[in-house]
Length: 230
Image 1 (tube, rainbow, N blue to C red):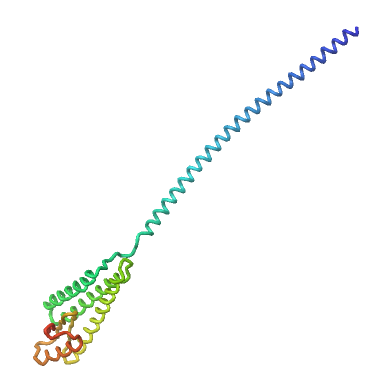
Image 2 (image 1 turned 60 degrees about the horizontal axis):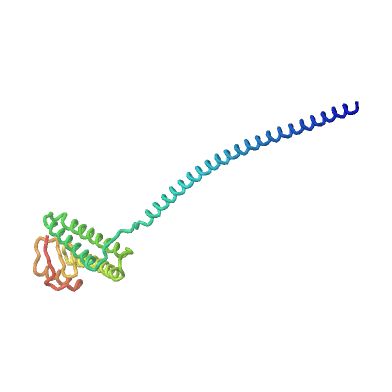
């Protein structure tokens, strides 16, 4: 009897042990599966996040490159000199004066065809406009960074000479009119003087008065002074 009871007890214990082992194994497998699934999900999550981060980084790089491109283009535009490039060679500076004088002489000749009432006003306007253009041209050379120092000094000298001639022209015109002439136009260069007076006829006395004024104020020889009436 005792042995039978003992055996039953033994069987029950063994059964319980087996059940515990089975439950432990089942829990282990379930946990393993859960861990594997979690790891797989986490790996997929990491891959997705990495893909998003890579995509965003590429977009940021594109934006940065575009901004750099814009900044480079802007910098290039800013580096383009706004300053007008001008010739500053000595021969070009001399040519400016030569061309200006030719333009004025041509204008005075064309104005000879005009009637008496408009000739003097138009001639003075043409001379003034041409003088201003010449001074403007010299200012460009003087203020340009492309101009060497020697040419800059030469341009300043030429500009001051033009201003001096303008003042002399006004003085000579006033002095001639003070001698009884109704009006006068005077154009002076370094070599010659052109004088036109408003009068029907010029006597030898009139010419002498004009020559006296011109030679005294300009120091130009009589041979290089041209006088005409209009």
